[in-house]
Image (cartoon, rainbow, N blue to C red):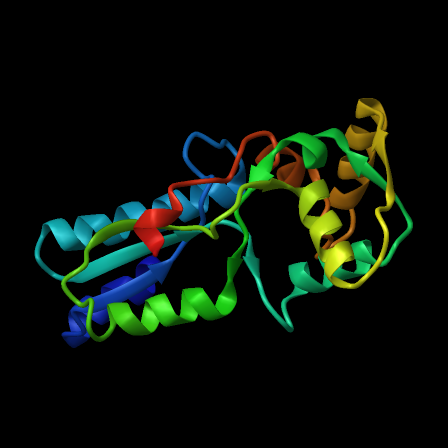
Length: 189
Protein backbone atom coordinates (compact mmCIF):
# COMPACT_ATOMS: atom_id res chain seq x y z
CA UNK A 1 0.00 0.00 0.00
CA UNK A 2 2.79 2.47 0.79
CA UNK A 3 4.23 2.07 -2.70
CA UNK A 4 0.77 2.61 -4.20
CA UNK A 5 0.23 5.73 -2.09
CA UNK A 6 3.67 7.07 -3.13
CA UNK A 7 2.83 6.38 -6.78
CA UNK A 8 -0.45 8.29 -6.42
CA UNK A 9 1.40 11.28 -4.96
CA UNK A 10 4.02 11.16 -7.73
CA UNK A 11 1.37 10.87 -10.45
CA UNK A 12 -0.65 13.77 -9.07
CA UNK A 13 -3.58 11.63 -7.93
CA UNK A 14 -4.58 13.50 -4.77
CA UNK A 15 -7.71 11.65 -3.66
CA UNK A 16 -7.13 8.26 -2.08
CA UNK A 17 -9.85 6.21 -0.41
CA UNK A 18 -8.12 3.49 1.58
CA UNK A 19 -10.10 0.54 2.97
CA UNK A 20 -8.34 -0.65 6.11
CA UNK A 21 -9.92 -2.55 9.02
CA UNK A 22 -11.63 -1.88 12.32
CA UNK A 23 -10.14 -3.46 15.43
CA UNK A 24 -6.46 -2.99 14.58
CA UNK A 25 -5.60 -0.45 17.28
CA UNK A 26 -3.38 -1.99 19.91
CA UNK A 27 -3.31 -5.43 18.30
CA UNK A 28 0.17 -6.98 18.07
CA UNK A 29 -0.80 -9.25 15.14
CA UNK A 30 1.03 -8.99 11.83
CA UNK A 31 -2.30 -8.23 10.16
CA UNK A 32 -2.98 -5.24 12.42
CA UNK A 33 0.62 -4.02 12.36
CA UNK A 34 0.71 -3.93 8.56
CA UNK A 35 -2.70 -2.23 8.39
CA UNK A 36 -1.53 0.47 10.82
CA UNK A 37 1.74 0.94 8.90
CA UNK A 38 -0.18 1.57 5.66
CA UNK A 39 -2.46 4.06 7.42
CA UNK A 40 0.50 5.85 9.02
CA UNK A 41 2.26 6.18 5.66
CA UNK A 42 -0.89 7.59 4.09
CA UNK A 43 -1.33 10.07 6.94
CA UNK A 44 2.29 11.16 6.51
CA UNK A 45 1.70 11.94 2.83
CA UNK A 46 -1.44 13.85 3.79
CA UNK A 47 0.43 15.86 6.42
CA UNK A 48 2.91 16.94 3.72
CA UNK A 49 0.02 17.98 1.48
CA UNK A 50 0.79 15.34 -1.14
CA UNK A 51 -2.53 13.49 -0.87
CA UNK A 52 -6.11 14.18 0.21
CA UNK A 53 -7.02 10.78 1.71
CA UNK A 54 -9.78 9.21 3.73
CA UNK A 55 -9.36 5.91 5.57
CA UNK A 56 -12.31 3.55 5.92
CA UNK A 57 -12.23 1.06 8.77
CA UNK A 58 -14.99 -1.50 8.28
CA UNK A 59 -16.05 -4.12 10.77
CA UNK A 60 -16.79 -7.54 9.23
CA UNK A 61 -17.83 -6.97 5.60
CA UNK A 62 -20.70 -9.17 4.47
CA UNK A 63 -21.97 -9.79 0.95
CA UNK A 64 -22.66 -12.27 -1.78
CA UNK A 65 -19.49 -13.88 -3.13
CA UNK A 66 -17.29 -13.07 -0.13
CA UNK A 67 -15.25 -15.86 1.44
CA UNK A 68 -16.19 -14.94 5.01
CA UNK A 69 -19.83 -14.57 4.00
CA UNK A 70 -19.78 -18.06 2.50
CA UNK A 71 -18.21 -19.41 5.68
CA UNK A 72 -20.91 -17.83 7.86
CA UNK A 73 -23.68 -19.06 5.53
CA UNK A 74 -22.26 -22.59 5.68
CA UNK A 75 -22.12 -22.41 9.47
CA UNK A 76 -25.74 -21.21 9.48
CA UNK A 77 -26.80 -24.44 7.79
CA UNK A 78 -25.39 -26.63 10.57
CA UNK A 79 -27.74 -27.86 13.33
CA UNK A 80 -24.84 -28.06 15.83
CA UNK A 81 -22.07 -25.49 16.19
CA UNK A 82 -18.90 -25.91 18.21
CA UNK A 83 -17.37 -22.46 18.51
CA UNK A 84 -14.24 -21.07 20.14
CA UNK A 85 -15.00 -18.95 23.21
CA UNK A 86 -14.13 -15.61 21.56
CA UNK A 87 -16.74 -16.23 18.86
CA UNK A 88 -19.33 -16.42 21.63
CA UNK A 89 -18.24 -13.19 23.31
CA UNK A 90 -16.46 -10.80 20.90
CA UNK A 91 -18.85 -8.51 19.05
CA UNK A 92 -18.79 -7.30 15.45
CA UNK A 93 -21.06 -4.96 13.51
CA UNK A 94 -21.36 -6.55 10.07
CA UNK A 95 -21.48 -4.03 7.26
CA UNK A 96 -22.86 -4.73 3.80
CA UNK A 97 -20.30 -4.72 1.00
CA UNK A 98 -22.87 -2.70 -1.00
CA UNK A 99 -22.98 -0.01 1.72
CA UNK A 100 -19.19 0.07 1.78
CA UNK A 101 -19.10 0.43 -2.02
CA UNK A 102 -21.65 3.26 -1.82
CA UNK A 103 -19.42 4.99 0.73
CA UNK A 104 -16.38 4.70 -1.54
CA UNK A 105 -18.37 6.12 -4.46
CA UNK A 106 -19.62 9.02 -2.31
CA UNK A 107 -16.11 9.75 -1.06
CA UNK A 108 -14.94 9.99 -4.67
CA UNK A 109 -17.90 12.21 -5.54
CA UNK A 110 -20.26 14.21 -3.37
CA UNK A 111 -18.29 13.68 -0.14
CA UNK A 112 -14.81 14.46 -1.52
CA UNK A 113 -14.11 16.90 1.28
CA UNK A 114 -14.28 14.12 3.90
CA UNK A 115 -10.87 13.25 5.30
CA UNK A 116 -9.51 11.38 8.30
CA UNK A 117 -10.76 7.99 9.42
CA UNK A 118 -14.34 6.75 9.07
CA UNK A 119 -15.47 3.73 11.09
CA UNK A 120 -17.76 1.64 8.86
CA UNK A 121 -20.23 -0.51 10.77
CA UNK A 122 -23.68 -1.90 10.39
CA UNK A 123 -26.42 -0.89 12.82
CA UNK A 124 -26.23 -3.83 15.23
CA UNK A 125 -23.44 -5.29 17.37
CA UNK A 126 -23.52 -9.09 17.44
CA UNK A 127 -21.28 -11.91 18.56
CA UNK A 128 -20.29 -14.28 15.76
CA UNK A 129 -22.65 -16.84 17.29
CA UNK A 130 -25.51 -14.30 17.11
CA UNK A 131 -24.57 -13.46 13.51
CA UNK A 132 -24.74 -17.12 12.53
CA UNK A 133 -28.04 -17.49 14.44
CA UNK A 134 -29.46 -14.51 12.54
CA UNK A 135 -28.42 -15.99 9.21
CA UNK A 136 -29.88 -19.32 10.27
CA UNK A 137 -33.22 -17.66 11.05
CA UNK A 138 -33.15 -15.85 7.69
CA UNK A 139 -32.73 -19.25 6.04
CA UNK A 140 -35.86 -20.42 7.88
CA UNK A 141 -34.03 -22.81 10.19
CA UNK A 142 -34.70 -23.29 13.90
CA UNK A 143 -31.99 -22.35 16.38
CA UNK A 144 -28.87 -24.49 16.31
CA UNK A 145 -27.32 -26.05 19.37
CA UNK A 146 -24.14 -24.13 20.23
CA UNK A 147 -21.30 -25.60 22.27
CA UNK A 148 -18.17 -23.80 23.44
CA UNK A 149 -14.90 -25.35 22.29
CA UNK A 150 -12.68 -25.68 25.36
CA UNK A 151 -9.91 -23.05 25.46
CA UNK A 152 -7.01 -25.55 25.17
CA UNK A 153 -8.62 -27.04 22.05
CA UNK A 154 -9.28 -23.55 20.70
CA UNK A 155 -5.58 -22.67 21.00
CA UNK A 156 -4.52 -26.01 19.53
CA UNK A 157 -6.89 -25.68 16.57
CA UNK A 158 -5.62 -22.15 15.90
CA UNK A 159 -1.99 -23.38 15.92
CA UNK A 160 -2.97 -26.17 13.53
CA UNK A 161 -4.52 -23.54 11.26
CA UNK A 162 -1.15 -21.75 11.21
CA UNK A 163 0.28 -24.76 9.40
CA UNK A 164 -2.25 -24.61 6.55
CA UNK A 165 -1.66 -21.79 4.03
CA UNK A 166 -4.74 -19.65 3.48
CA UNK A 167 -6.58 -21.10 6.48
CA UNK A 168 -8.83 -18.41 8.00
CA UNK A 169 -8.65 -19.96 11.48
CA UNK A 170 -5.19 -19.39 12.94
CA UNK A 171 -3.52 -17.80 15.96
CA UNK A 172 -3.81 -14.32 14.38
CA UNK A 173 -7.56 -14.79 13.96
CA UNK A 174 -7.81 -15.97 17.56
CA UNK A 175 -5.90 -12.89 18.77
CA UNK A 176 -8.04 -10.54 16.69
CA UNK A 177 -11.18 -12.09 18.18
CA UNK A 178 -9.93 -11.10 21.61
CA UNK A 179 -11.61 -7.71 21.39
CA UNK A 180 -14.82 -6.20 20.05
CA UNK A 181 -14.89 -4.87 16.49
CA UNK A 182 -17.64 -2.28 16.90
CA UNK A 183 -18.17 1.46 16.49
CA UNK A 184 -20.71 4.24 16.23
CA UNK A 185 -22.87 3.37 13.21
CA UNK A 186 -24.20 6.93 12.96
CA UNK A 187 -20.88 8.26 11.65
CA UNK A 188 -20.93 5.79 8.76
CA UNK A 189 -24.58 6.49 7.97
